[in-house]
Length: 308
Image (cartoon, rainbow, N blue to C red; front, top):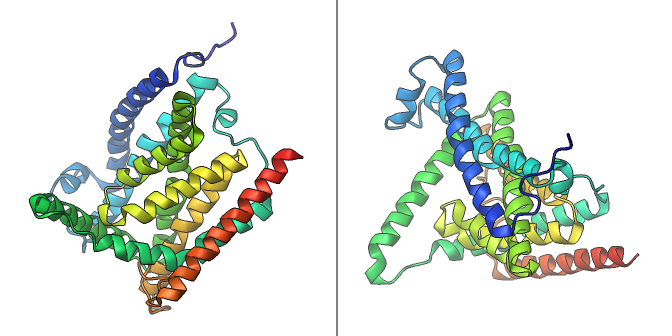
């Protein structure tokens, strides 16, 4: 009996509904499995510890939160995507555009754009952080800043490790899994479904980038993350392979992890948040212009490759 993918001929909006249903089921089942699996490593007190007030200065609590973060990433981003792709196409690598070979020259340019854009992105982040809502929304702004502070505290707790083991765990949790999982989820599934539904790939890229940035719930970093989402979306569209945005996403996140680790060991005197930033407006604007130029070069290379 030949397996016929259940979602293959379903309309995009129905595929999206099924995808949401798969996500809900995955979050429930994978997290339960993760809780059970945690007992041999952390003991029976695991659930009690993570359900109470967090002491971010306690290495044991931070270790449990890291474990929970990894399980949540698997439950939300990776497992549901693989299940959905199987029922939408059966050939998972083919559906997610993982079969195409990637040009090393394109990787070099794409990564160079991330590095060259650090001053510009950090400048935008600073501008975004100074955002102020109208007086009528002061309560909303207070909640947003409290959420931002909480997220920053958790991130600092994760990145404070100075051990090699801590570095490897952080690379897995903050660089590898998000690069794979979030690109699977946002570019591999959502961008594709929106493109099929709206019939306009550019709108699909921008809508997906908006959701990508909003999902992180860090409102005062919304603009730079939104632009990153647009960039990753076009990398996927131009290259036709999900590997290129995955690699760029990994470098972007991994750079912060390595800088934070070096800072924790006293080897550098900067933080991951300020790495690459500049107080010189001309440097920031030049950074933006260089990024724009490199993106245009990348676009022309891919356009020429499609003609040959």
